[in-house]
Image (cartoon, rainbow over the protein chains, first blue to last red):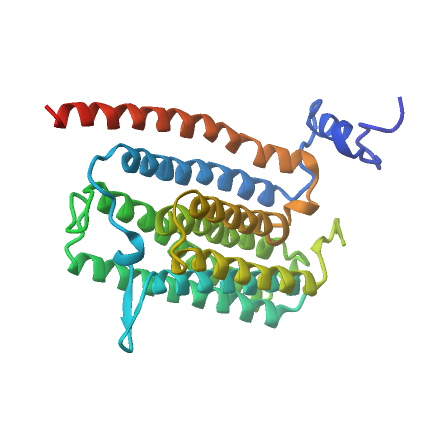
Length: 227
Length: 106
């Protein structure tokens, strides 16, 4: 046997043998910090939760005999006299992508041990998150004024309201939680906690969560708003 | 570009490129609605842009492209089970739909 699988100073195999090695025997499977592995496993479970919501949305939309409200019109806004279909959702999408970009930069500067830039970029990410939630609150208010309720609405199938409030509400909750999480980590970065431990992993782990929130929005945007 | 014990360190330029790409893809998927494409063309384009965006976010922003395969497979394979759920729920929805048509036409 070669040094494959040995635990001291091992050369790790790549490809399929690498998978077998990493998973086999009584040893560490993931060669990443435990916090990162745990965050990935949490995100995997969250994937299942959001998928259940989107699948139930598919189910009720396919099985209703009443026409589904046209999201392009329901979410249209009139800005300066121009009728813009789906404009608010498009802006929210761009804001979330921008925040993902600033978060990626924050992780990058974190590994460069640039304390101030990392903290500023994380706070910028959180600020974009706040504006996203603000726009969502505006959107909810507008729809509720239009008479959309979880049990019915004036535009078409009754199930529209239930799925809309459930899916966007749960996503908005994730964004809100992410803003708080990012703010705490940004504060710890600025205070110099991670310079003391010489370890900026916490920034990358927070980044994973934030990118996931953006990822979920990609699917909600495609299936709920565009379909 | 390599994932080291120091963590995931990559040049900033790759993040900027992916960032711009995500903007372009989002604009394109918004245009699908603005242009008023219908039916299979619409659904096909929505799915293509969606999977491209999701792929770039996971691979680059979440660094999955540089993680070891053991982690990547452990995270990316289990969601495939969801295809079974989606398939079953689609069949069930069809059944409910036709049952409702029969019931409401009586």
